[in-house]
Image 1: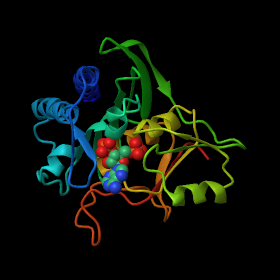
Image 2: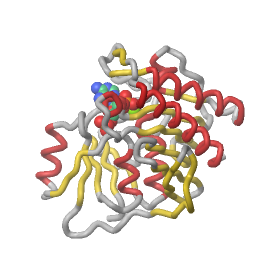
Image 3: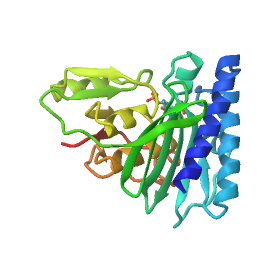
Image 4: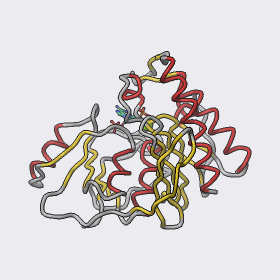
Length: 258
Ligand SMILES: Nc1ncnc2c1ncn2[C@@H]1O[C@H](COP(=O)(O)O)[C@@H](OP(=O)(O)O)[C@H]1O
Ligand SMILES: [Mg+2]
């Protein structure tokens, strides 16, 4: 399965880069977040690939949900797709945007691919192994290398959102005595924890499950974890929540090895 997901993410990323170079057309969704022709084109590519290869696995995809199309996932494994995470970065011509495909089984992210086309980097994970490759001309160049979280030292390096940071995140870093932090866009934050170049990603502002599933799968396979503020492993497939919309995540803290 993983190779099919990787190939689909690479194809979607190539379409995104064509639009990136030509200049995307931007509109704004009901929640005022930007969406571009690249989001829609990349999602169509991924949905077609998944439907052809895995017709029985439901797919929850960001723009499909925005259009009101949500499949029944009850009791099933399912895909979460964010065709272009970091749309704001993309629009501002910053390279921190990613293609994301994650597979959820029993509420856990078990398989994932994150592709950052402008950086030429692809990360993936399945069966407890996380790996990374450079991408050239739309294909992995050279060998995939296995990646793993580092053990956190005396000076933890934190990652924060570039556009959606919050006062609570700043307070958390102060309370924990964390002095070093870097703002990084999109699901790349999970990948940097997974490859052992940072230690903690506190997310005290809103995300949706498709923003986090693929990166979280890679982080967990690399030896890290994502916990809610109650200390419980972040679960996926959250529907019919009393006071929130479907597939919204609570605040969470992702980290490498303690
Ligand atoms: N108010 C809000 N409601 C829902 N999602 C939000 C949000 N603010 C930010 N996000 C999510 O945060 C993602 C960007 O994360 P980051 O800030 O770490 O780069 C966005 O992904 P998209 O770019 O796919 O829309 C979006 O889904
Ligand atoms: Mg997103």
